[in-house]
Length: 111
Image (cartoon, rainbow, N blue to C red; front, side, top):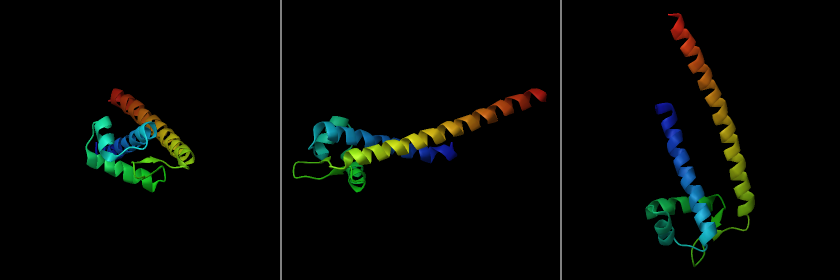
């Protein structure tokens, strides 16, 4: 559906960024090629995720590959808080949809 398609795509990208972050944490320092092999995704997608994670100050480049920054713990907490707000918003939207479905079902019965 058009009203949710863009959001779904963005969520898939965010999910990939978080997975890349976890793989960097578990294998640091690690390069693009090795990450792509471990995750079984194209290098260009890994490169994009690394660039975003670096902009967010979660990782930093090193001669041996990407590694977590000293402030990553604080930044990860911020990501978690943001995802919690998104979760709350999603739950509110689901309640709205349930209400629409309920009212739609009762309207259909009256006809």
